[in-house]
Amino acid sequence: DGGITQSPKYLFRKEGQNVTLSCEQNLNHDAMYWYRQDPGQGLRLIYYSQIVNDFQKGDIAEGYSVSREKKESFPLTVTSAQKNPTAFYLCASSILFSGKLDNEQFFGPGTRLTVL
Amino acid sequence: AQSVTQLGSHVSVSEGALVLLRCNYSSSVPPYLFWYVQYPNQGLQLLLKYTTGATLVKGINGFEAEFKKSETSFHLTKPSAHMSDAAEYFCAVGPYNAGNMLTFGGGTRLMVKP
Image (cartoon, rainbow over all chains, first blue to last red; front, side):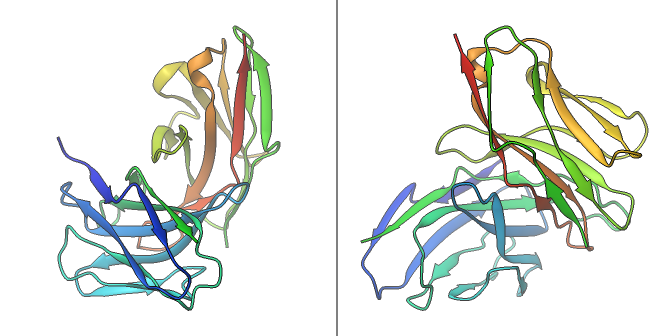
């Protein structure tokens, strides 16, 4: 079955530590996205990538970093510079066709990060 | 710029009653509109989407939504609520660039009473 996997499901870290969240997709999608979800605030975009070795900041990129070395992988690192990292993190992907912009985003199951 | 407003962060209905979740958007270009559902501690699943053509869109699990350009709305409805419909629902508008970006509303949590 094609889909998006995120690991781990739950993650705990101490203050001052960096942590990396995994996101892998086997849908052959071009674009991948990272969102942060907090209660009552919907989804906020952290980073996105349209092509391998290229990515752009979203609305709340401060304190986060990403890489896109392979089409199927888009890991997110939450650095110690992120002041309030406790949240639910969602990875998504979508097709990018030239001239066709109505493609939905497909979401992974999410990773819940808790800073102790 | 695009934005989405979902009226009511929490909606409660009785089982068998009509479900109405409201979504209003603003967009400087013809919008594509989406409704997603999220069950606790899970990712988002697409319910339905409007791109072009028929303004009444049918989705999964008996949900439908109507695009009303004059009202800049895309409300989600279901004639008869089921306990399994209890979840959080997100309206989204897009895209706003070639990266297929979406702007999400704040979400509405639907509670279904027996």
